[in-house]
Length: 160
Image (cartoon, rainbow, N blue to C red):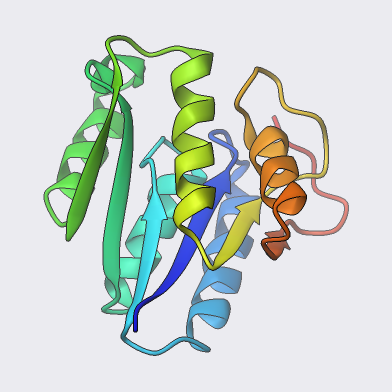
């Protein structure tokens, strides 16, 4: 039976936070066997970092794409290129029926990830979401369903 780890996290991470998160994710993933799938939306920042850790650990990668024109939400060519690279390595991809990027589409994608998960990992500073469907909203949704959430955030760090 496959164990599903869902993921949510901030898109903007200070460099030191990214390094901490990458190290902590590697530690956490060591506790899982190869019948594990990590599911994310591949947003820039923490989501893409999680996907790289999943792939480097030889786990399966699942992706929930929030909308048809999702790639338009990436503001840099580097983030868009990384998105396509990671997407090409996904073992499964689910497309949600929203036509354009929107907070509603992001929230629906986050809920879908939670609904499919046995456990969630969140790269979260503990602060409220900066827009509907952000990390705090997804953590709250998972908690309301009784799904465990492991939060990664270095003490004293601030999000930019």
